[in-house]
Image (cartoon, rainbow, N blue to C red; front, side):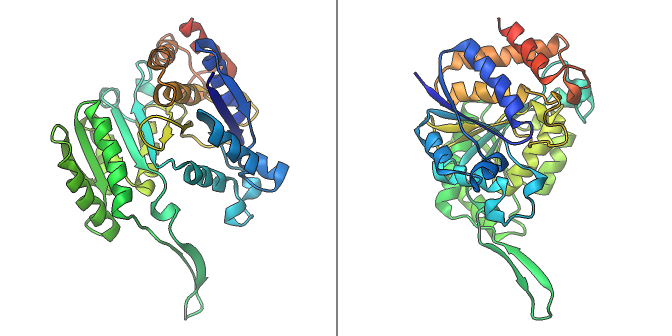
Length: 348
């Protein structure tokens, strides 16, 4: 029986993972084990990623992650803040590829920041590199010769890191419409020039995929002007973080977008909603569980090979939305649990 590790985390993380687990229990038999991570783990153990939590993640078949972050810990040194756990687990599990789909569910046109006729066209998969870039480069603070405080963060990639995420992008595009847009800032950044050069080299292996390139500032503009032009976007860690959050508002709400973090094709992966811990609404039953539920569907598809069950969950979310189920972020009044009940009802 597959073991699913659940790492609820902070804020609304425990609330949304609880509902995602209910949906998983409806479609299959799994073993579940929970462990603390982030701020919750720091309170318990003095570290945001305890050894026991990491060990559970490594021996599981897949990890369902909630959310991390709490203003209480902002004064800690960076390595002890809740966010360090997320970076650490990605690195320890070798999760270099992040898949973030953004698609508007029928009925949510008015929730999108875009005009309905434009919003309906969005159906994009953003493939984001996860273990490089400025998030993992050398960083620090110091003082200039003039006595001014300064900070630095090194943006770097080597060609092997770019090549492996490029292949994930091309393989993903092959399974969709065959269109891959590589997003960089090659007109300014040497890191991006290397990125573009390597992506072009890898494209020779995929003659059936049409490759295009776009600077990140233009990509941000095009996502709101004409999102339907995109099929798959492949980009670096920093740019991918920003563009995927932007895409979430094009699709109605950040509470609707799941993600998968993978070490390659198949096998162990970590699945999480792209939203944060939202401490301002934690414990109030206001959080939208759909992103966590859809993340559970991705878990079934990519780590456990349960495509039919994943399709059923996604269809159930779509039906619940079409039938009028809405949490506050979508302009409705349903609680977190009631929204999950609507999905479970559609699933049945």
